Length: 112
Length: 118
Image (cartoon, rainbow over all chains, first blue to last red; front, top):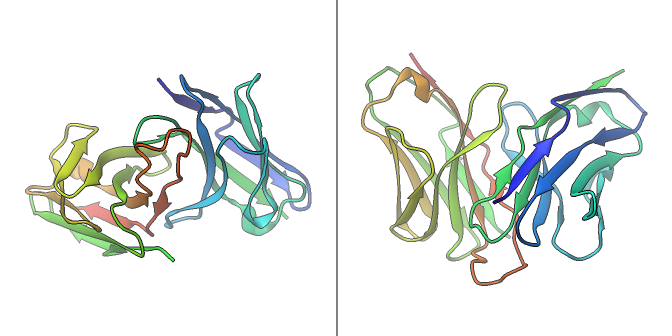
């Protein structure tokens, strides 16, 4: 069975400070992991993906995530937050099943 | 490149009325297709997925149904809407990697339909 836990439902940062959104996963197989971003009333946009290649994955808009098998984590980071980063973020795990398992989401607020 | 179209963007329907939401994908063949519902301020709930024409799997029992009449067309329907059917409906596609173990592909989402039931 697979599962994903986003450890924070809300994260608030100031513009220009680092962002850390935490995600832990569970999978019976070697998984793929993804982060998505969703702006209000929009669909989900893929930020980055891990598919058993490099453990440090770089994505769009300056985001990156590191796959840590020993910690079963896939945390999303960005060195400097921008106002436009305010959105909902979803961590997703996918393995042998056709459908993926989505986390409950983390709302990122960026203060000026 | 691949694109996904979902319409309408917003829909207001009375309780008991029928529903038909359509999703089409361009630029790929034999994709996996998905319907999700997202309640206000909550995560995604997988409703249906399809690995091929006429092949539909339901994840959650409800008064909704899905059909895939063509390879890149996915339709979400209801005969009689309930108040609880309100929400944001998202269609998504992914490459069909059922036989490519270890090469799992991400899902790509449409812009969603905001459905309000009155």
